[in-house]
Image 1 (spheres, rainbow, N blue to C red):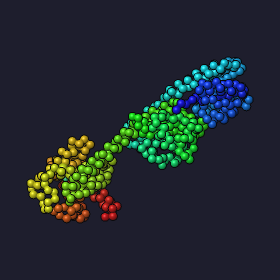
Image 2: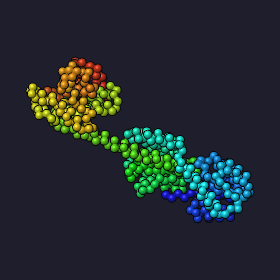
Image 3: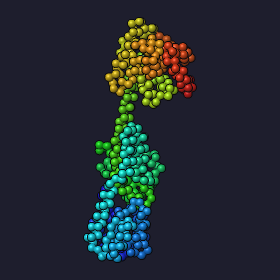
Image 4: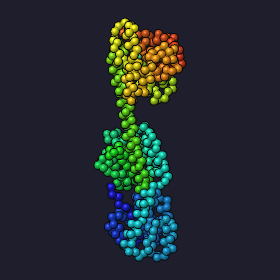
Length: 476
Ligand SMILES: [Fe+2]
């Protein structure tokens, strides 16, 4: 969007106002006029201007008083004073009060145009030089954004730093994938919630960041909302794809965002877009891992109708114990996933697992290999490899009489000791080809009896505690 610089011409002589307005309009500036300082101030509070070209001596409020009043405005427009006194002293006084430049009357119109052009150019350059403080704040925000794979954390950081570096009254973020179907719920609390349709139509067509005044902001605000005094909307683009839109609004005063702020927010949006895409990829990867594990667990269950659901139940019991132990979320997830995969190696066994009665000695030897087969199956799959210790060692015993290696308790990884307890409890309480399910009470007694020999004596009481609580919740 071409943003024409806006100029306010302030002079009590109508003819001068008209001449300047005409000439400056020819130079592609958007010009408004005011007859004295007071009406100029009222206009400046209504709407944002890049430059004020003001006479010094006017009724009601003169140029110097106008300058003094403008000192407190944010952002203050660049001011050029026109003085008919022809004395350098008055001009210097005006410069001291914050005027950018002065023009002595009577002036040539070309001279005015040149001064205005110079002033605006200088203003543009000043705004382009990002303020160091904002840049540092933005840099640390970017670091936090880039280091995070949690979408929630990224969005929170983006909103906080956008607000912090621009002093906006409202900041909001629309994500393309959710916003295209309608406005997000939290938008209701905003005075100027963005209209997703209008915003994405603009950005999808290749549109750049929007820096809007009240008159222009209306069409990007949802019906029923209030057009803010100033609005800045930047796209979150990643490799050409519009991932979202970041909107900032100011409700009070002229409210306009300057060029430097637009640049800052664009940089922030750039980083945010990349981080959001990464977080989404990571989430997709987690889903793929979960689905792969579920699919493999189903394959195990197909081998033996008697053990259908066994993998899921062992995963649940192992998860109960892991949480009771206070392990962190990532470890609990690994425990659950390892437990779900613990019998994957049965796919490699030749023995008929459905045969009624006990296995022969040879069949049992073959069956025992499912631990090693499990490791062989998972090891080459990069994202499942972390599950191998639990799968390989879940039949080891604390007294060193387990298989496949017969290693003693201290050498058995915690994850395998957890699965061992969960696996045994479920095996006992489920029907098998060669026997009926044992009762919960019998299974509990068995776990207690074998604590220290087969099972980790410290884990058994924790497991029983977690199990009883879970059973109570389930009404069992
Ligand atoms: Fe097993």
